Length: 294
Length: 257
Image (cartoon, rainbow over all chains, first blue to last red; front, top):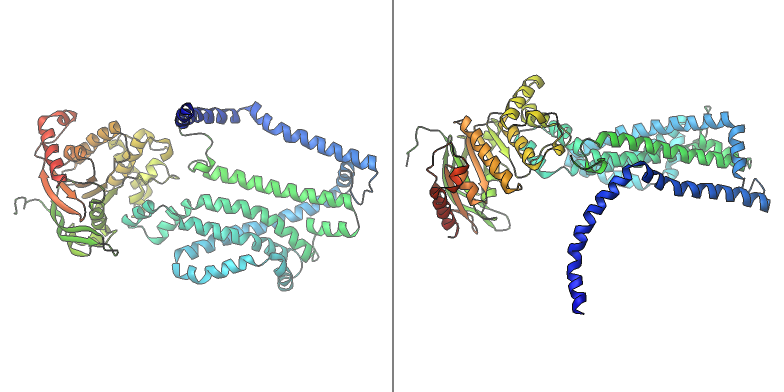
């Protein structure tokens, strides 16, 4: 018993002295190549096994391709409809990017206006929250009625879905400026505009970046949902439109190809924004620092 | 009373009081006059109201009683004249700006042209020995260097009144002593600059000041104002003189009342 108590008392300090160096060594090995491979290899192996198993099960059980196409069917569908698929992907990219950019510019812009005046914020913000809770699918038909079927409505849907995360994230960021820094600006007679653009907006950058990451994936979803509802309206159809058409024709393999393209698009979009945010914050913010201070 | 009438009065407190809305008396009936070229330390334990006095002088907090003149006018007006500069315990450097841009910030906020303010910033960075680091980002600097940059930022506007709120409180003892010495050196270059320095470290207060205002808590009052009649420049050997020990003892005794 006595020994146990002594051990228990000794443990915390031992933990402290042991964990620190371990963390450092882990970090180092993360940066080197073999460790990177070590993290990439298991999921890669799992992927190969999964695809192989899928192909095998489909062939052995002779499953109808319109129920569950084999991976090889999907690849074939991509090759056969490559041109169409590319047009769809391209259209969706355009719509998502436009919607995303709109949501960033207007989201940050409105947040700046709201954060500049407590009065305006108190009036507007509750409604902004209420509007955020309205499912986009529910109001999409209204947007189609107002702006006509096609790219206008789709861009607006993609914009709306990404707008509120941008607005609320930026607003929280603008409100969480360090009090000491605010005092400093106040004491040096900074104008409200100077405080906003030299202090509050840069401090809010980590929050804005978090908003960007949410909004960019939402914009892709918004564009595809928009295409479901708004169709093509005379222009070229995006992925959402291609999916509805393929579903109605029971082209399951192409349906899979469209779905996969949509998720690849979402991931690519996210990675791009992620890289951008890393580049923006790398010089100063802890969340994106590569190594410890020199 | 008017022994130093030749020198201009920088700060004047008359029956200065601050009672917080919850009834806490942070500062009660403080009378003190601080002249041009003085280095005055407020020393006392936490909760003695020294930071509250600091806040009132900066205009961040309003007195609830008595009078307070800064540079011959109200604290808010004095701040508008840009003759006052500030250093806090936290270095408050903008993490996204380089050292030189941080140091030039007070001038930038005042609309001084970029070329002119960078020139001024370079001048003060040279004074604090950070010229080689002016392109660095704050996070690349050590704690002591960040504080030097913070002091440089305060000096860039050539202030007549420098207000420092426990600036070395977060630093290790060795860095703290180096910076104390450097601060005295900077102050001695500008005979017109008045420094008000808040600290809870008696040794620091005695080493730096021409006068020490000893404060005691609940309610915050000035228990004694003790002269440190030791000529400048003071160097490290001053810390080991009997005179130093004696003044430290006097201040410590005053703190106990």
